[in-house]
Length: 320
Image 1 (cartoon, rainbow, N blue to C red):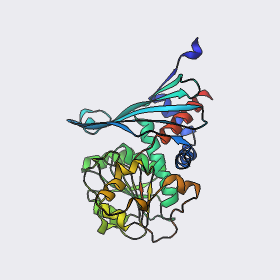
Image 2: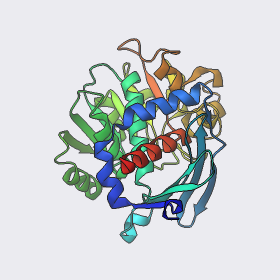
Image 3: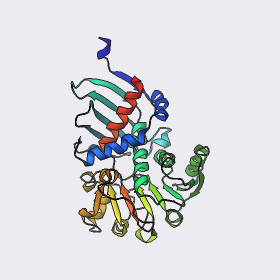
Image 4: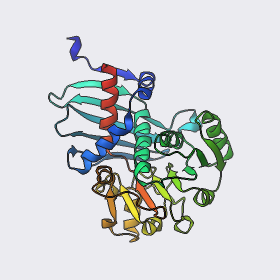
């Protein structure tokens, strides 16, 4: 009877496991499976809140022929830090694909969603960032802004970063927390300074108005936009995408309803045919960056295959 009881795993145990797993290959494989039609991923279910501002996403799916399926619930309530709470929360449920039995309940408090998003940012940079980036720009000094920089460490050699935040106290806290990260971290309150100084930029905010303008973006720049995961959010001027030589979506179908590609199509800045899928770049079906002068943009709205892959890898590590 004991074997039928789902395993319940808390955040502390999850944090201990993650450093021991090689996450990026699993995330790459998930994107490849998705773009090759080997994943079943229904449209995102979501709840949007105004007072206070927040959103809840339910993402779920499975890989064909795999052993499991996953349902994930993740929330972001952006005024929580004022209350002494994390802006992120959530959990993942891992089931047996053959019987439907719940095998594991991962009470990750949103951490696995944050980590898999950062891992996706690293995958995008691996294929799209300049070969020798001079400086990394991080727009957003919250949880995701920290994780994105940490996960970039495995795919780029650059160790100089410029970070933008809403106010000086936030930036000082960022520097303090990241002082042992191995990066030389400078800060700014002007996003234009990021565009002027950095050729690898990550935007990781819940902004509803563009933080970077097309006229600011120099040749050779790569931008990974991860914050715009609802139809209301937007971090980039749509004409940045018009200016780009290569636009990559984590999910083409999803990016037609949310994210930077969605906004650029709405503004008639680009045709929907201009974007390609990250999984196609991973498999080599579509080439990533091919020259130092290209402007490239990755629009990462968050796809359930990322949740499937990270839940499986944590569960397997627990069993081992």
